[in-house]
Amino acid sequence: MTLIKNGRLVDAHASYQADIQLKDGQIVAIGQDLPAADGERVIDATGKVVMPAFVELHAHFRDPGFTYKEDLASGSQAALQGGFGTVNLMANTKPVVDTPEVYEDIMARGKELDLINIFQNYAVSKNLAGEEFVDFATIPESVKFLSDDGFGLFNNKQTFELFEILRDKGLGIMIHEEDKELSEIDYRYAEDVHTWRDVYFAGKIGNPVHFCHVSTEDSLDAVRYGKAKGWPVTMEVTPHHIYLYDSDYKVHPPIRAKADVEALIAGILDGTVDAIATDHAPHSAEDKANGSPGMIGLETAFPITYKVLVEEYGQPLELVARLMSSRPAEIMGLNKGRLEVGYDADLTVIDLEKTYTATNFASKSQNSPFTGESFNGLIEMTIVGGEVKFERENE
Image (cartoon, rainbow, N blue to C red; front, side):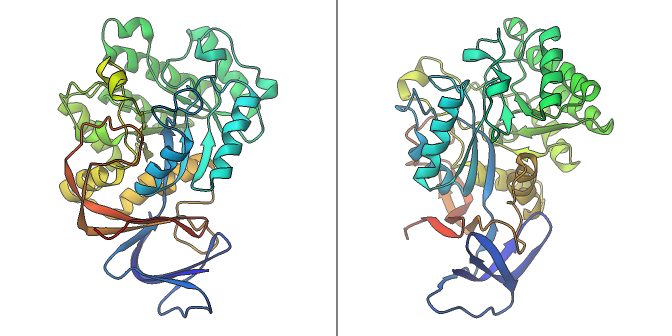
């Protein structure tokens, strides 16, 4: 058992001073002056914030096949240091996650590590080639989402057929929206055209679609239109797309213009945006120098989101909890993301008065444009399943 005392409890629905007690992987009590049981660990959170551990919808751990960039262990440590208790991984490994064997191997090794909750997406097409669908009949029952992340979907007819199959099988899909033919002309057109198409298909066919790393004003408007229609669409934005603009740091989709940043933040404020997701994309220094797109993001996600939404836009911390904890957990169908009795005991303890400097990342990779930058809000502890999995040493 673990008892956290005197902290400010913050989730998507409330912010108040209280103690919180954890047992057998769940929250079992919340209240004032809760007594400690014999042998129970007591954590003093005076002056600190206790939030539900963050749920990452979109990350790459490069394992198997590219473990010189990241592996399940190093990625999990990066997640813990960023306050994440759950991470959903993309399928672009080597071999690609397009067979039950590769999928089950990753899931088993993640469980054996016993650090964070690891979920693994399954590819849509064999070898992510965008030509032939995977064998839907053999997809394990535990798979929550399919995704060819990093690649846009197929032509209109194939996409229509895919959405019908996913609807009938009850499978979700996460989409990196990019028309590769249009990418040669303009990345903005490449994202916007496919986003509008797939919002329309989601509504007319009726299968849930989650839009990854939405980055433009018009793509945001497409999802907003779909939601206004009552269509089953959700979306995420990344910390770097709501913080940076007019930057040439290479990511896909690219860093956009200031008007796009302002539109994304407006979408957060009006509820169109469901989640903050990092698209954590580790690369070696050599690969990055040779043009590989992407950045690591798990360890900087909360400080950047806190800076933009709370410090710059004056929003309550409850909004951050909604975007990084409760709503992603809902999208994944998990009993997480809330500070209520009966929910999973995944929590993070944060000192908002301490400074976090982006350096010496736990990730194997160091490809971040934020290196050396300082932010308010230091993740001091991450608890998963009621057990302390990360505790920052006094500095």
